[in-house]
Image (cartoon, rainbow over all chains, first blue to last red; front, side, top):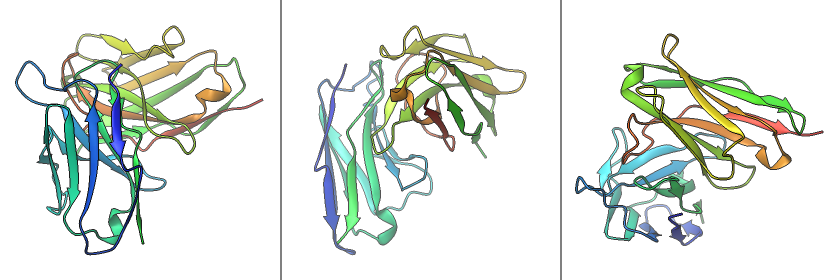
Length: 112
Length: 121
């Protein structure tokens, strides 16, 4: 199975400051159509995951522009330009070309 | 708008079966597939399987293969996940999520609200 490795697993953040989460895939999630199927999800306590980013860098509708995704090959980054209180929770990366689908372990973001 | 509404919480004995439903609305049902993802208490996300209402194709995770069956009912726009021979480590919140309808590349763009399945004697 493709292993998705996130770091850090715990990220205390100060409101207004930037934050970054890294994700490494054991195999590149580049599909034959040329697209890279790497997504990021945010899950608040007691809620379902919500997709933020798809195909590495495309923001979903309604996602604030302080969230951005980047990367290529096997290394990817989710960046929050200025953290807000509502950004707390867990963040997961996921590869979408290999079966089984696999997720990173999750990064817990907390306000300092 | 796209909505995935799941059935309510279940409590089952070890060895029993559970069937969770996921009713879709807001889009043509057969145009998209479903992945099922579970989350054990305090743990991360684990993919369980995928089904296409378009052609009935399925893919299952190895650790539930043989115990899980995913189906869809196009007349009611509902996807189902049945898990048999339940064990305590099947205790989790089970989510359905919308995926592409063919077994190619994709991502879960919409998620249900989750169904807690508790396996306890």
